[in-house]
Amino acid sequence: MSQDKSQRGPIQRRREISDHVLTEGSASAADLAERFGVSPMTIYRDIDELEREGVLRKFRGGVTAQPSGVFESNVAYRKNSMRAEKEALAAKAVTLIEPGMSVMIDDSTTALELARLLPRIEPLTVVTNFLEALNLLADERGLHLMALGGDYDPLHDSFLGVPCVEAVEALRVDLCFVSTSSVYGDYAFHQEQRIVAVKRAMLKSAGRNVLMIDHSKLARTALHRLAPLSAFDLVLIDDRTPPEALRALDESGVRYELAPT
Image 1 (cartoon, rainbow, N blue to C red):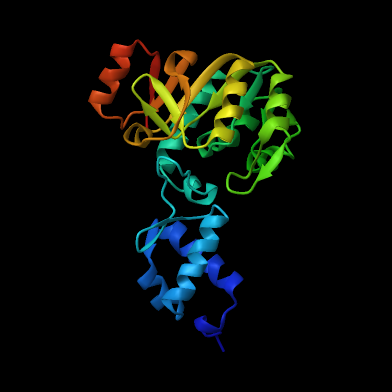
Image 2 (image 1 turned 90 degrees about the vertical axis):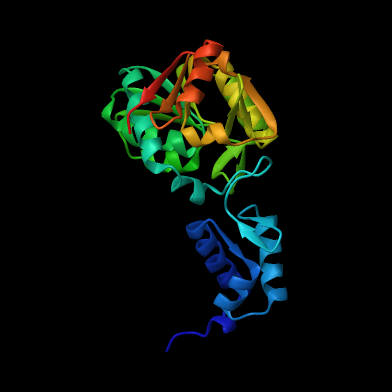
């Protein structure tokens, strides 16, 4: 006999709330209270705890998994967002890599799609702070895998902080692939200072830097300036990018290539 939803413990209920919102993108508190058979007060306590954990973000009357200018989405939500565009960017990016290179990838879900393609290229040294990428590539014998340590952050499933920055600064790689949350004008932006610090260190540690962004990043804002687009040797963007956005890149003199979706 199935368990009544109202009798489920708070940990299990919050997990199911998180799964539901990650799937749907957002939900109102009233709908969640009805769906899980508990009071609105209980749902608001659940929402408060999920926001404290960094899983979801509150808005008036509900909760969302979608990003804002100061909040980056949970990695579980980001993995399923713009998937076709990220796969296209990865397919374009992998053509820049040759056997014998050292490659650094950040903790973006766009770079994760690139990580899936790296076993095609051997030998290769791969450096990353993204736990999911480390787990994905751990059994690939043709790859020399280097983990960047630091403080583990469950929201991003990656290692951050001063120890991670120092680990990056001790290296020099051939190529660095990063993504970010927003591009506005001639700059790339991100919501969180701790992410910005690691990405900046990565850019300084590489001979060449590649920014991978899907077109949705051009319609968002984020709080912290990461780097000028001129800091990247190449910007990869999917071919669903609006023409006016491409004109802006042309006018700024940014070198970019389109990834066919």
